[in-house]
Image: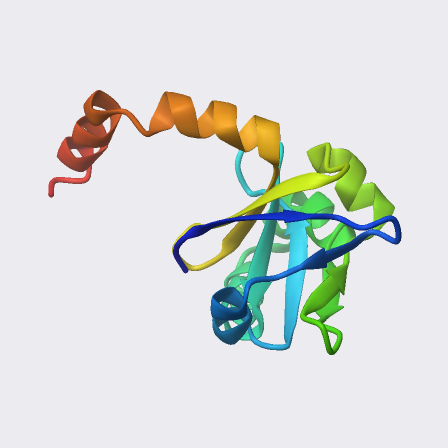
Length: 140
């Protein structure tokens, strides 16, 4: 999934998803805490979520427990007729989402950021030097 989209969370905690991403995520998908140290949320299509679950289920139980916060805070989202999802308050609080939001394609998932936090992150990561360094590290 690719692209960057600016939207707002309404007073009821609903967030509009762009049509392009709705097509890729599907009408039912999962939103949870980011798997990284970033203060954002991640949305996964049903197919990718099933892959994550299969991988988790293949791990020893002692390692499955490490993923407890991800699954305890996950929510299954269904879009309404206007293409909006309801983000639970706990998830909005975790990512610092109040009103202005950046929805960012991140390959096999979508990230949901506070717009100001995303702008700062993007400004530090989207430099020629950083992109070149990442490409070298990935051996492209």
